[in-house]
Image 1 (cartoon, rainbow over the protein chains, first blue to last red):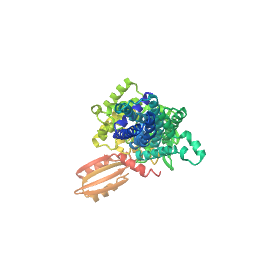
Image 2 (image 1 turned 90 degrees about the horizontal axis):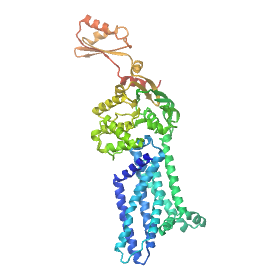
Image 3 (image 1 turned 90 degrees about the vertical axis):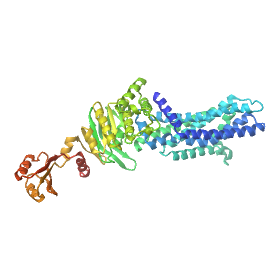
Image 4 (image 1 turned 180 degrees about the vertical axis):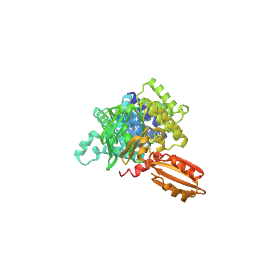
Length: 249
Length: 313
């Protein structure tokens, strides 16, 4: 367990010594801030409720961040270590491959969570500037964030997986972006597919609908299980990819 | 310590990097792994360090199979990869503490382990410096300190002096000699003087196979063409040549004129060099003598004759 904590700490630290995390976090907050401001200004003035704001923000604006930020955030995890050769150092230390994969994932997930934390400040700010007090439903807010983190963890695991396939960070981010975009766009199928069977089959797997649920304050255990188990599955696949170096090299 | 039997490593695409290699390293030995680039040295070392799996054969480190007891094997040896990759954004002390944690040292052992490794490798003055700002020589020492930090009694160093300047090479060699007193060492190199300077025994690889596994003297004896003598006297080259030809056991003779001096290169079988007769012969002709010495064949020449001729053998 101590080895795992050591690996995780190193992983988190590696993000904060490179400018990538700072640039990304800044860009993320600017875009989120503009989105929030827009929604709060336009929608709330129209007489929309706090829940409409949550749906618009976490079910809408947040997707932009998820799609843009996650591939870039996770692209370096293995690719960079492969490129610089430090993976050999890492994997000749007495640590298990699975520990390395999970610590890398948890490291990037930690950074992802840290990036989201400042967005919590939007609500006290909104309270201050609003003409009449806005009732904040903390339960719904917690639900929205759990959705962001659950879907985020699944997509981050895809990013880490893509990173383990290559030694080039850019190609890693492009391939994970493609995979994530496909999964995201497939989320429209229940609404747009002309074939009823496809509409029905894809309905339980639409991240768009899931996110809408979470943003409404509905935590559906089915989707929780779906994202947690998918994350686990992808991370196990990543471990297998890492092990394959032994015979492929 | 190390026991390798019929090791084979095939890469996808049909490349066989190592083929039916067997050797062993005993406790306390310092063994040099020698071969031209691409001979399969690094592949063998990576397998020993548990980074790659063998395609066939048995590889045991301290009696443990590297595939089945992978983590245990990694725990008990110190390994320095060829390119000495390090996290350049970390400080020296910080990096070594991190590595000590990964190798499962308790906090107390970590402190002593890191300090001992830094002291042995002369890193105490740079422990607060970023690894990325260090010279190649210091980075190499950080790599060696990393291999040492959990105090393993077996060290595997892949090309420890590659890319260093002559001063740094001398320092690293000195360090290796110090380490050899208390550790079993397997060092690879394609530079022969390196092996000559540090090892008691050599394993020579070429094209994925072992050509020789012997002590330095044995190797020289077996592969060098014989004893070379250099003789320089003040005389006509043609005269010297004519007289030297009648000497018994001369395998090769070459005489060149250098101003007033005749320089002769003679080659005899091992132990057959007639120093005394030559001396008497020079006195007899009353020729002024400038030089008479036996030239040891360097490992370099031995190596060339092995990997060129022996390659097909």
